[in-house]
Every structure is written in structure tokens, then in C-alpha cells.
Amino acid sequence: MSSRPGTFHKGCPSGSGSELYGSTVGAPAQRALEEAPTAYEGIRALLRANIVTFADPERPPGCMVVLAAAAGSARNEEVSAFVTERRQAVRELFRQRLERGVAAGDVPATADLGTLAALYTTVLHGLAVQARDGATTEELQAIIESAMLSAPRADP
Image (cartoon, rainbow, N blue to C red; front, side, top):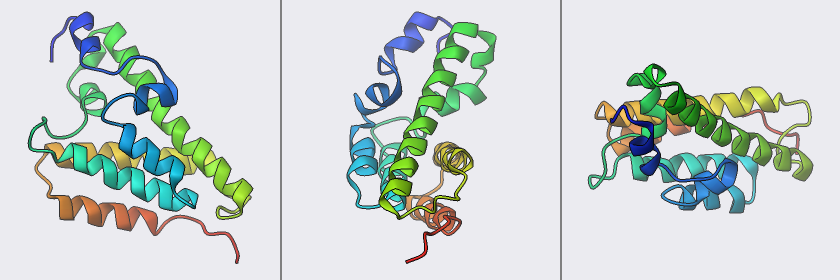
């Protein structure tokens, strides 16, 4: 990774929030999140779509925005702020989808949406690290399924 912010920014999609995430390789994952019939199905679909990208042999494994933090972007305040903003934007996508789930009745109104959004963001980031470290697609799928077991369900 270059230490020059301009070089780093060229490798990332522009914009913020869902515009940022959905403008490039994140488009299928974001579409899966938004179009699924329930919030949890959307979250599962987003995570699955991301592991396709994370494990793509044509790309470096993992996710640049997640891995940049671990690789020392803190040495450059501009790069650090940039990747932090992008990680927070993904967390907000999860929170918004969970809010829609509450409105639709598939997520309990008592659920702590901020904590759930943080949980699924952490899972997404962990998948990137696991992919970088050589995890197989099957191993990444198993992680997703384990994470989804913790989802609070609305009463039928």
C-alpha cells in the first residue's frame, strides 16, 4: 500500500455511505442487502456476496478498506480518516436495513440495532481478515452461518 493518500484514494470508490459502497465491487452485495425479503436474509446475502469478492483469485484477498487499518494507515491521518469513514458507512447500511426489518416485523422492536449493526460489521471485517489469511470459501460460509445464529427473531 502506498503511503501517498492520492494513490490510496485512486484504489477506492468515491463518495460516501451507500453511494460509496454500491458504486463498484460492492454493488452486488449492497443490492442483496436491500432486495432480500427480510433484514437477516439481506445481511446473510451481503456477507456471502462479499466473500465472493474477498476470495476472488483475480484480486488481492480480503478488503482494502478493512485491511488498510491493520496495515498501518494510522501513520497517515488522511488515509486513516478515509478508511474509517468507509467502514462506518457500511455499519450504517446494516443499521438502516435492520430498521427496515423492525418496520416490516422481521426484527424485534426491542433489538439493539446499533449493536447488531456493529456485530455484522465486525463479522464482515473478520471475513476479510480470514480471507487474507487463506480461509476457504467454505470456511467463510460457516462463519457467516454461525454469526447469523445470534440474530434476535421477531415473534411470529
